[in-house]
Image (cartoon, rainbow, N blue to C red; front, side, top):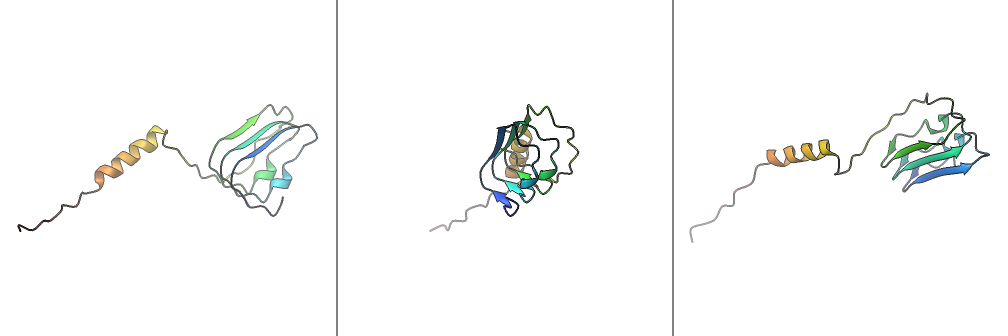
Amino acid sequence: MGNVQAVGNWVSIYNNQKLNSLSGLNGIQTIGSYLYIQNNKIKDLTGLTSLSSISGDFTLQDLPFLESLDVEFKFYFFFNSSNPQTNNNQKKKKKKKKKKKKVTSGK
């Protein structure tokens, strides 16, 4: 998978007791939905160093062999409309926009 740079939907890696490395994912830069990693024997996240954006959740669960989270990520976070801070910013932008007055002739 080293040539894959983007996944349009989700990535789910779970219940693979022979998996001890994510190095095969080292080319992935973006994931269009979520990344879910559960119940594997991975020791670190070094295979995800090229990853720069995940549009959904990033979940690590039941990874007893995980020794380190020491990976430099350069993430861009995308917020959905349920985020209150995002909603407040959108409301402020709408208020700042001036409405154009319609000019009509007296005919």
